[in-house]
Length: 437
Ligand code: UGA
Image (cartoon, rainbow, N blue to C red; front, side, top):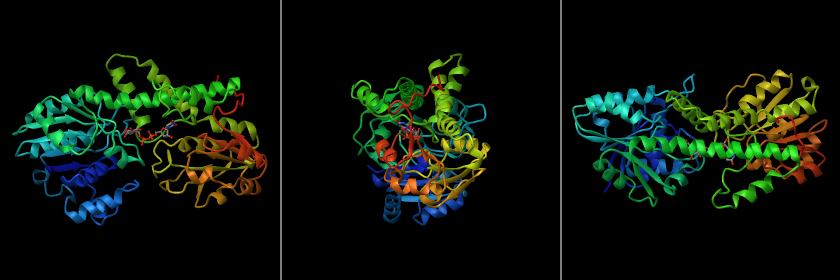
């Protein structure tokens, strides 16, 4: 049966949630305080870059199952039987998750409610948040407000696929009545339901992201070791990934993870652990390895080109991964200023990444303009466009040793080398690096 659903926040998680639930036939209202965003969504334009989302957005709007509003005239009439909170939980300066937006919304909803509803938390919130929101706001309301912790596991660029073909749906609840409603909400999605208490559901979200980050930092350490001993990380990844207990995903070595989730969530989990008197040693190392890994291209380009102040460097890719315009916590944001500090002239090319100013670097709109006259190029994002480059032409436009630092191990080393370029990567074919030991 279609449910009346309100989704608060039209950021990445909120918009995907609203559009997908409307596609499943529910009556959805997406609410955002930003009038410009709401206007854009009403006009059928997505506010995030996500393949396929605009088609579903327009279909829902035209069918009348998807509406966009601001809370300008009060929350009371906006509250749905299911009201999903999907506002941001950015990182505070101390590494903790900043819950101010979540608290503001939950307080407003609890104060405005004049009929019972179920509040679904999709924002990533630290363990214990559900309990504290219940005590501070929900239990103070005039009506019953159920609470469900329902973390999301969407990857940017693959969010629709991840929504409809999810590996699992996690539901943390304290009341069976709320679970009944949630089963109805996700009726059309075939996936195992993990029904548990609120604190465990909150933990599942952080533990999932921390585990995936651990896999990445682990394979990066093995890759660095491969460089020291002359082994090949591609073979090693394949060799260990075929063990079903390990699995082949998230074993791509390179310059480490970025994005709006892994860096923030690992630091927040470390903060939660510390706050609870526990030293999460493994997680601290995962974070440290990742911070160090993104410096690799800087170390190697500086070493190969001691006269960097007279050179140009091309940065290929600014997004934290392909198929997104998101540059949050992209390794490029650390790499570029360090190379610029050495006096290198830097040109950045990315097919779609958000246009942000990085001091000391110029953004160009064509990969050839970035490569023209460059002595080194650093591949930061594994866009297909870079894997398909004409390497003979690259050699002809680059100068000096023509260093290609493949920060994502995504290029064909032989194709690059046979064009007369100098290929460097992370743990591939034994490059005997001992500097990070
Ligand atoms: C991640 C998780 O994969 C989602 O399940 C989760 O819902 C989401 O965070 C979130 O918490 O909202 P996302 O940040 O979109 O999704 O990106 P991923 O595809 O997981 O990639 C993260 C970073 O790891 C990228 O910088 C990527 O280049 C890097 N990565 C990934 C590697 O360096 N090696 C790998 O093998 C895989």
